[in-house]
Length: 59
Image 1 (cartoon, rainbow, N blue to C red):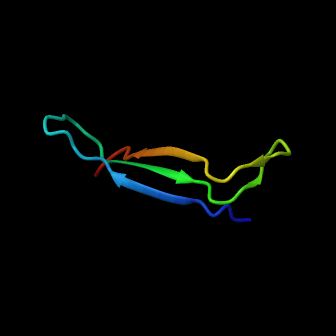
Image 2 (image 1 turned 135 degrees about the vertical axis):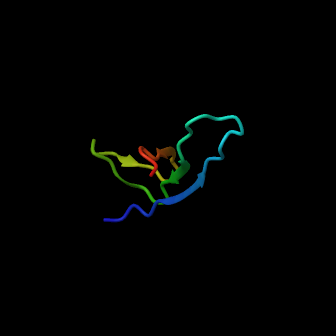
């Protein structure tokens, strides 16, 4: 089953005076179609969620 999410992300800029910064991505996911929820209801389309990812150990 596919929920057909739409996603977008950007690489976060480095602060000019930052120390030991890690590369990071930040973005959003949009639910484009409704689907059944785990509680027996319906999860509506149009819900937007934010996500981020930080590189743990840059080489």
